Image 1: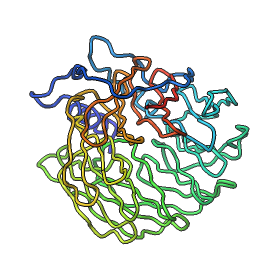
Image 2: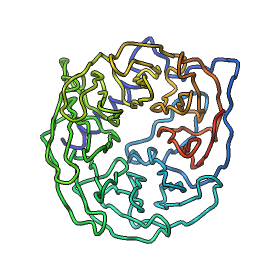
Image 3: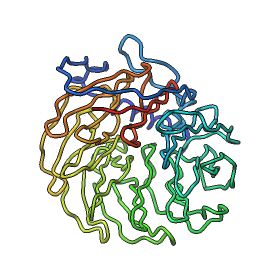
Length: 396
């Protein structure tokens, strides 16, 4: 796809997901009042540097970045290790803190522009770059272990499991690298449509299987150690009269629980499958560009209209929905104890009651957009704002 066509599609996708309908305001929904029955407790905060968001919200209007800076850097996600938090910023710095206290441990300057990260596991942390570079550092010291290369820009955090660094690149390829030295172990590639949505779709690994969503609504299970396809299923089928209408890509993480894996597509469907064989369990019409979460008997998601949904994970039937955050560009949900946490474009974290979707707590961070979902850490959560604040919080 040529550059002009790509930029046109990117612009149209912003319109489609943000303000295409006459019935939807371009402004975030006003926050509703509620009686708090829980509260967020900020344990520590550190200014780690901007993650790429170029402005704060003013006059309750959206602040879309130009393609020049649309490199996924506003979706850098902190990595949680056994006792540390590791975060990156748009200056290509990687910083490490003690989880419980926020005590600074180390900082290094990465040798290339970071567009995907941070990943962690096996005693190392890993980041990917806008030209396909991949760097692995020792978790304890920040010492560089190796720098490798994949086929194109890395838009999501690489994953590490059982000695393999798995990297997803912008061209749809997935590469398995040896965690010891960066040697390429395998390359997974498949045909993709001419027109695809640019997104930060990543990978999920469980029991030696890599799960990844692709363009045209495909969900694949791939062998961690050999890159061989174990199974592939169609979550959704493209439909519509125009190329834009036919985009039905999976641009969020697949999720797993026990024996099932679930994925949702943009302008498509949500489906759950047998994790080992790919057999369909259930599906329903839902569109999401943000993502899913599973906890206990529930499956949670944030849809394209910024409605939070709670479904039965075994059947897909509805429990509840909360549409009071419409147009606030919320993140994927994070289940935490008895709560469900989402963050939004104005830097708020909202806690919902897991059982009925009612609001129970709210806290504002630094006022800049939070694009990547909060991450469970210790007894609480870690969140990184676009303007560069890293928070560790608990809720009770």
